[in-house]
Structures are given as C-alpha cells and as structure tokens.
Length: 150
Image 1 (cartoon, rainbow, N blue to C red):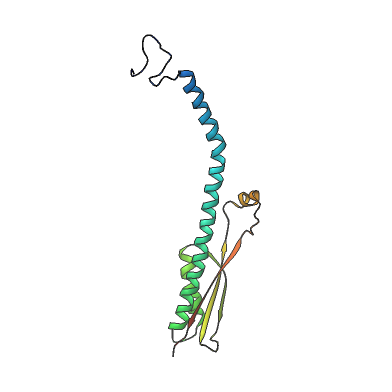
Image 2 (cartoon, helix red, strand yellow):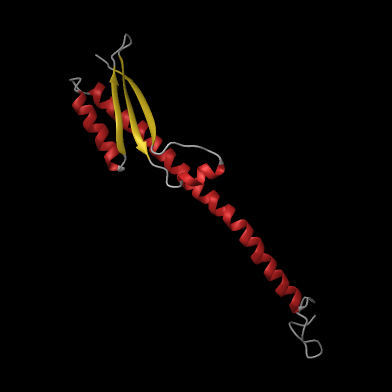
C-alpha cells in the first residue's frame, strides 16, 4: 500500500478512506466534546468543593486534638491557652473559628474540646442545581477526647 495520495486517486488517504469521511469524523468528535465537557466541568468543580470541605473538617478535628492536648499536658486547666492553641491551628489555614467548647474532666478523667469552624462553599449554586441543599456558611465540627493523667 502506498503512503499517501497517489497521482491516480488524489481524494483517498493511505488507509483507503476519503478526505470527506475524515472531515465528517472530525465534526463528530467536536460535537461529542461539546456534549461531554459540561459534565466533566461540573464533576471537576464538585470534586474541588467537596475536597475543600473534607480538608476543613479534618482541620477542625486537628484543632480540637491540639486544643485538648494542650489542656491535658499543661499543669493548669486554662481555657485561654486552649483557645490560643486552637486559634493558632485554625488561623494557619485561614479558617474562621465559630465555636469552642471545653468539657471535663468526667469520672474517667476524660476531657474534651469541641471546635466548630465556618466553611463557605465555592460553588453553592452548583449543588442546588444538582438537587442538594447545603447551608452557606456551613459549620463543621471536630471533637477530641483525651485522658488527664495524674
């Protein structure tokens, strides 16, 4: 088989197809892309926003863990030190602290810190378009428990 057009038949490619068939397939690919692209865009934006929510939720747990750790390791049960440590963790990620609750110790010497942070959705309209309703801003909460030894 020859490698391209021949002088005998200038409208055929090396694989035997006509140029008009190739042009028609190119148009089909463009239409398929135009139909699939919006769905891929919605999927990408959804993944970005939900991933951010997971990140902020994990940050709330981390801030609560750091807060309760400073509470049980320290010699005094000073809520100002706990608040300072929680603010340090949430401030590093530029997340707004909405609530901070310190409880304990209970009968088992467990103390807990509950941290609520404010989360703003980037694409709230996208979720409502998909049928899900989320509050904006949402409050994501993390709770950590530790035992006070000694």
